Length: 364
Image (tube, rainbow, N blue to C red):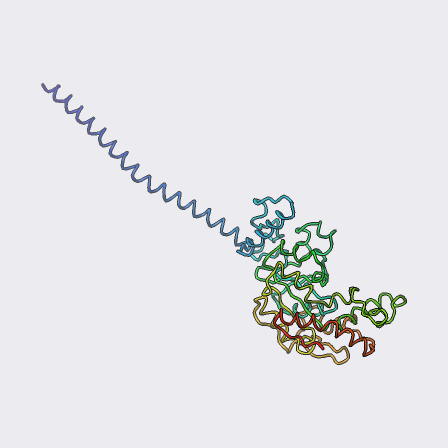
């Protein structure tokens, strides 16, 4: 009887131990599951932090995405292959970013382009805009969109011609012949529908004379007088490029097939000569730049008849002082009947331009 009771007690004890073990295993599972969840969340948060850091080091922004969408559209329209995984996000290798720096120095396509006009003051405008600390400019004319050989080198080649810039900077390129070249508006539009376009305009009669003076300096023994150059008998040689460039409204209409008028800004060379800060402040506003340029940065040089950089601009522009000797060349005295012929020819075109751009430039 005692043995039977002992066996029953041992059996019950084993069952109790088994139940206790099962219960403890269950508790282990209940404890382990939340711990595993917390561990997984910690690892995931580290991954997110690493990704965020990577994007921050690249100064990733919405503008980068918008640009690359434009880049994809450009590649698609040009028939070239476009690898979305390679180009959709601009990482360090593509933008020449310094990996050791949190600031993303890179070569970026221009936010704005000075597209014209030839002998209208484009170099002066570019140099004056360089006074702004957020403006980065090309030191030479690239001729990408108007030169087929350069254009076939591709958009990445064009990008490499740009200066290094930071996110938030405005990169500007200027090539005056863009404004009058028929194929350029479409090509720029295919690069970016958001790029801002700047045109500095000048009295077309004075512009034609300045154009002649520049060509004459290069070919002093081959150029006739200005009067002979622009006329044939009593008629104006309106088909020559020196005259055609001044038909601003005709060229502008080709741009308006691709860009709204609000995306173009027009600068008066005459006003920039007299009060440069006023014209430049309007450009700052157009480019959404913080106000910086003011009248204290300039003085008027009576000899050159053009504004130069004052001592306040020292250190802000490497070309401190006046522009090169090539700028502000004296014009020859032109017979009054030739001036009248030119002004009468341009006047109706000028009036159409004033209406289109909502600005009267006051040319005679």
